[in-house]
Image (cartoon, rainbow, N blue to C red; front, side, top):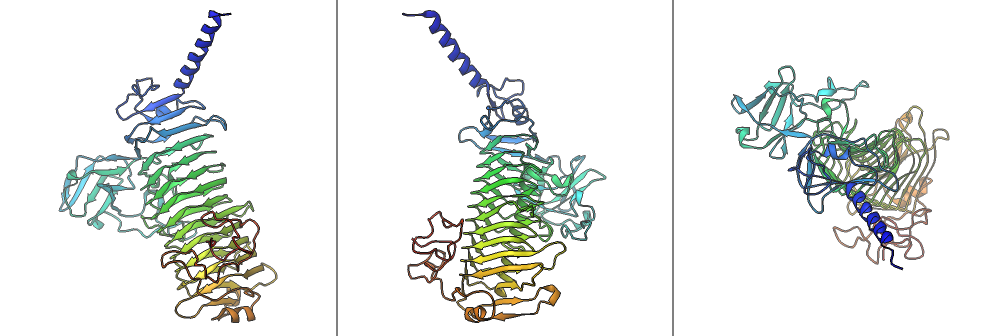
Length: 550
């Protein structure tokens, strides 16, 4: 029987549902107005900050293309089943900047121009997108030296008298910003942007927020604090397909004392000190990102700089990233020693100019597997005063400095070097003083170090394998120039090889069918595939190195 009341009720229910879905979406555009409701693409808001603090769990903020200059501080949370999503609208490109365009320049003298009445202690100035060199120490860094005597950085000049082409200086007392462009031209003929905001975006107090497809530029954290970042995450934040560059310190930091953040398929490059920072964060994931050319401000990499730095018991997974050309360590775990599992897997770690491509300092429970580690300064991997570390099936080539694989860093107050395994690696054509350097066990704070099933080769010169006492013994040891001598005199290397690994091409680190690394590795629990996802083993036993022949 036809029941018009039932049909009418059903229609009203559907309309109500559609209205609720529409109301959960908020739109933002550079041409919008915060007087608009923001609930349709034809009547968008102007401010991203207003939008993200109006959306509810399960809702989405759609950001239209264009440039936004604001500091976004979000307080709204989603849930595990109804996250809040903040996303670029369709394929458009929203660019969010923590800077302002500076105008009203007057000539000071010669090629030096000034902006008077500038209220911001800008830590960055850009000339048509190219950064100028800051004169003096960053604002929050005092004399430039930390309490322990470590220099934060070596400043360039100190005041107006240090001005030269491609530099800027801010006179805090007089509130005057000075610039001298590369060709000493009038900045009125360029787009000059000066950083003004402590952060570009923070969601630190939120839970289950997803940020997708946004571009972030410029910050001024150093005007407020030592450290900081352009984009600060919260709890269970998902940062995906975003582009974060040219922030004044770190590009991104996970939520402090939070958990569950994911940084996926992002570009995090050209930032002032480092790409990603994480401290006291539980279970983070950094995956599929390009993290390159960070520390353009040349902070002291022995203090803090490079691609990724994790401190104070932070733990999680770093995999399938390209981490390259950073002026500091590629990946650095420093006092991440609570014992929770840390995974560094299937990354390409290339040409980083710090203490190591991978630096494991006073940390615990770390697996380093299937990484390609090439061209790094000082060391390929440095396992320093750390415990329960496995270094498995990596390929190390063209690293320079002290040692390609270095197991040392002792003595260190309150720390030990125990349960270290180095197996299945290809160590080829490095120019470091030693291909492998391992300190001797002493039965107390240095124990249970194993090193075997590795292939070591130098096309020119002899291999170098060092074993000896740590600093307490004056670093007295022996450098062996063949794998057979090393195996005969040390507890290591009974199944190691000294032979050309026979890479497929001069630019590829995959193996030819005739490679001596094939079917000569070691079965290791948890190593079930290679850098590209090929299952291990393809033959009877796994191949040595990051790539399984198939």
